[in-house]
Amino acid sequence: MYKVIGKLQSRAFRVMWMLEEINQPYETLKASPRSPEVLALNPSGKIPVLIDGDAVISDSTAIITYLVDKHGALTYPAGTVDRAHQDALTHAILDELDAVLWTAARHSFSLPEDKRVPEVKDSLKWEFARNLELLADRLTGPFLMGETMTIADIVCTHCLNWAAGAKFPVENEKMLAYGKAMRARDAFVRAQTNNAD
Image (cartoon, rainbow, N blue to C red; front, side):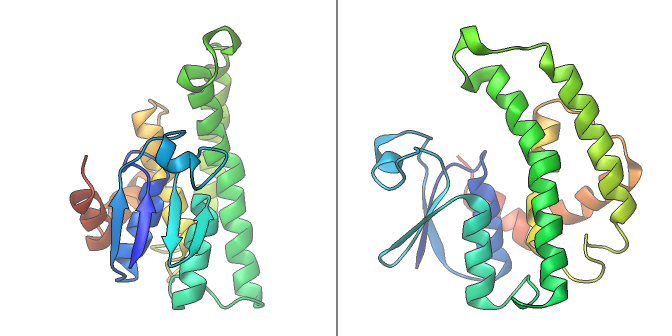
């Protein structure tokens, strides 16, 4: 059985949701970043961490990529052009949505107070909205890659939820409808319900 270390209100949710989507049993240890439990497994202190037998894997995207490759679900096969497009899309979301949200979070609570620049948030909100419009232009089906759900959808939907919590407006109708449909998935609901704090 897999063990996911991290809290629901973090990138650990991506892993929990993925495991629900691929119907794999798991348990969770609700640990915070830089807690002793996390530092014992990941020197950076970041969550999530996945334990699979003797293997310890960190970084939410690395973990969900490992899971989809291992179980052959929610991904195109490695070495195919479709997989290259999937990876490019996933990395674009990480660069253009996740990184923007994380920069805002650092300047809200993560950095030492004297290093925070709260004024940067207006610029980040503009950048996030612009990047979301570009992503919406690529949305051609129920999922980001058309008819096939992939890890890019897990990362993107998590970013949309994060944006709502961070008060980053999501005004694009296409992305609002997409996010609503993704949050309605049974696996998404199970991940939230089964791991509520």
